[in-house]
Length: 79
Image 1 (tube, rainbow, N blue to C red):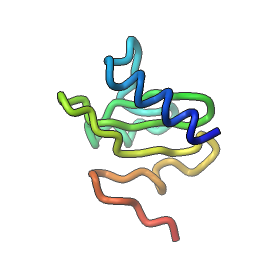
Image 2 (cartoon, one colour):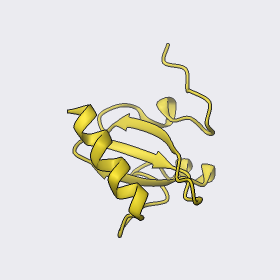
Image 3 (cartoon, one colour):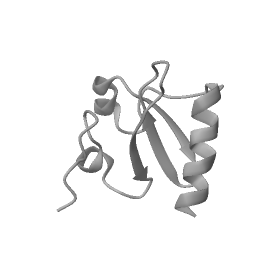
Image 4 (cartoon, rainbow, N blue to C red):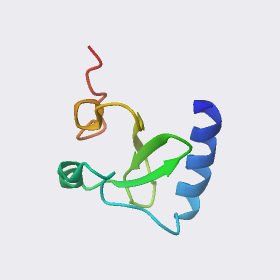
């Protein structure tokens, strides 16, 4: 399911999603990173909204998102 969700997210992000969020609810602290977020299936995808639209985060909706989201292009620790 993740592979299909990723493919769907990449397609949506590449054309510019019609709707996006500055952070997944209820995590307003994630807005500080400047990513845009879309939800596909039960995954949240964070991406940089520049012309290249780089996916920076893929997080399951049931995880503790602030502890698993990366503030930049560097992978977050999953220990």
